[in-house]
Length: 309
Image (tube, rainbow, N blue to C red):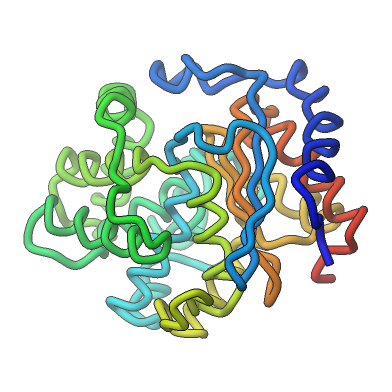
C-alpha cells in the first residue's frame, strides 16, 4: 500500500523540492510566468475516497497539455476510434511538443499523436457542438463530472495570454488546414483550444481525474462508468507512450506510471487499478515537464514499486 500518511508524502516532497532550483517557469506564456518556481504539491486519491497530500494542494493550476488526454477521451466517445485515428496518428515522436517538422515529412498534415500540439488541435477540432461555447461547455461538463465539482471553470487571464501569444499553434493550424485536416476558422479553434488549456483546478481535482482513468473509466465513488473501458485504456496508453512530451521513453523506464504533464507544472498520474495522482510544481525542465514533479514521481515509484512494467 502506498503512503498511509500525509507526513510520509511531506518527506518525499521536501526531498524532491531541492530540484526546483534547476527548473524554470513557462514565462513564454506571460500569465504562467507569474508562478512561484519553488511551489510543489501532490495529492493521491484512492478509489475508496481516501486522499493523502502534501504541499499547498488548494492552489489552482491550469491544465494546459493535461487537457489533451481529457479532450481525447471525449472525442473518442463522440466520434469513435476509427474516425479519430484516420485524422491523427498513434505513434510517439522524439520531437518537441510544438514542432511542425513531422507534419511536413510524414503523411501529409496528419499529426503523429494526440499529445503533441498539432494532434491536440485536431482532437479539439473534433469536439461536437454547434458553437465554440457549446463545444467548450461539453468538455468542461465532462471534467466537472470526473471531478464531481460543478464549480470548475477556466482562467480568463491565462486563456487571453495564451490566445495572444499562440503564433506557433496558429501556424500549425494553417498547415493542417492546407492539408484538409482542419476545416474551421483558425481563430475560433484557437479560442476554444486556449480556453481548454486554461481550465483550472487544484491537485485534489487532478488526482480525482487520475483515479477515474486508473479505474478504467469508472468513478469509484459514484460507481458510474464515465467513459468506456476501452477509451480509458487508449488514453492511458497514450499517457505512457507520449504523455511526458519527448521525455516519455525515459519516464516509462524510470517511473512507469501512465501520466500527462502540462507546462503550468501540473502532472496527472493514473496507477492502473490503484489510485490517481495530482502534482503541481511549476519549475520546468528543458522538455517542459515539472522538474520536481518528475523527481517526486520517481521517488514514489521506486519506494512503493509503482511501475506497471
